[in-house]
Image (cartoon, rainbow, N blue to C red; front, side, top):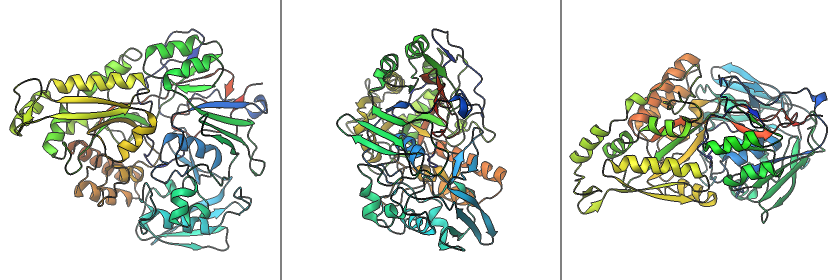
Length: 554
């Protein structure tokens, strides 16, 4: 994952642990320890030059700027990974390493105040011929620090802690000075953008609505066909780094249910495996296909809308609804056929298996009996199937991606569970193009989707769980926040000691549970189906995708 925020809305939210192997093998779940990847690693001399990698799109983009509110999704992460710079790239163990194709150094050069100095690779040049410079940093900071509300940015965390961006020894060096310590500074300026995109609100909001106009990576845009919902990338002849093995990367929007047939018919080379066991079997029985598996930062959850005036604005009511949802039952239903020992995820910030993970869900445990008592005390009387108060039924709308059949399974489970409390849940499946606008606009009571985590868990989640400021919600689509959570984020983002910062992070997670911001079901496993001769590409786990060495075995 290139994006450093938890800003990845995934349409296909219900993905299960899948077995390895291909061609008719039975399910055989592998050890998915943190640090494992499953990409058929091959040296470059065993990967043939040329060929097309064909990938499915969940949503055809309506903005290619990842930092703009409409561009913050997993498909833009995929495109950015192939075409845009990142100062640091994710490693298999969940860490970060300097990307020397773009920067020769990036380090803290002073601690009082905190100063980070970036030195740009002299070869680094944007596709429009403009060399990288410190002014790219300056304009990026201004677009993302929140000082100008005309920039429709999805987050300001970290950038609002910077006091200045100045020229270093020359135009190829940027000096970033912070007004207070900022621990997870490596997550900033990623993806890295040219000043031409970030210098004005008009450019930031609209210049990349129909294409990624300026790139700097192993690939660049070849063509975009909105009618066919297809984006074709080609090798960038101006790329100064190690050339990509592939000629092209072709991305086309598919209905998720059509993916197994598309792989079998040699239309695509990769797809994520859904929780329908049949989809796993289809991948295993498809000639020339393989199933690969690794840990994932994604987790499946339901966000509760606590905005003022919404049905769930009252904390006690939100808590009762959350306590009526059986996370363990949903996890067994979705993952049990493949992994009988599957357990719910108990943390919003840290993936299970990582050193900082703690199950904090006990702060708001599943307790339908207590939920019934709370609903009674709140005046929601049960005189029939649905509780009422002042003549108004307790009815909630649950929105989710209708293109994924397994989403319906989760939604129906939640509907049935809450019906036991006397809560009516109206299911509202939406096509991908409508799901995200409804969620970001707060047009829901309950919303089922997945978040993707990052190597910088506090700073990347601040925009999701920090309190909205007026109408500016960033990525807190449930509009639920507290001064306590905000204060803990301020403390955690400034804490340079890793262990102390993780302790603060887990305190934040406990508060998020108590506020019933969202109900986490399970860590979404990273199983994928791929063409069996595809090398250096597949289940990347916590690492970023390697588009330079990906290709087909000779």
